[in-house]
Length: 114
Picture 1: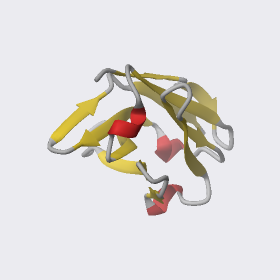
Picture 2: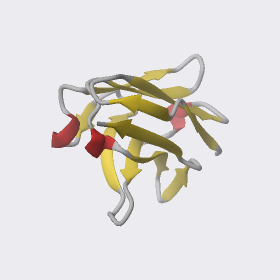
Picture 3: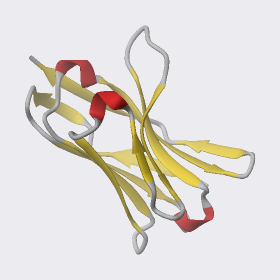
Picture 4: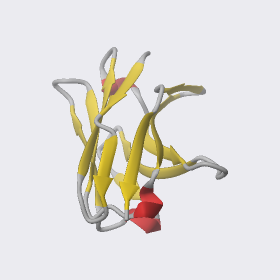
């Protein structure tokens, strides 16, 4: 399965961005899908996830600001990011997990200026 992210860019603090992850097939085959991010010099971390049943979870640092959703008709998972902060600057990756198999997108850069 291929995952392709889009929607990254440069935004001022307090602004919003919407990331999208398009899968090459039905996303219902995945146990979970999620968004991770990796800032320079830091480990990759989970930002938000959504299960096959639609349950969501978020990192504490983004709760109340980010929303993960999915469009089953388009086989896409989206991440709406509001009230962005400079510390949200990172490369954001889409992830999909089914059984013991994991897929990653190529990543999209999000830069938040002060």
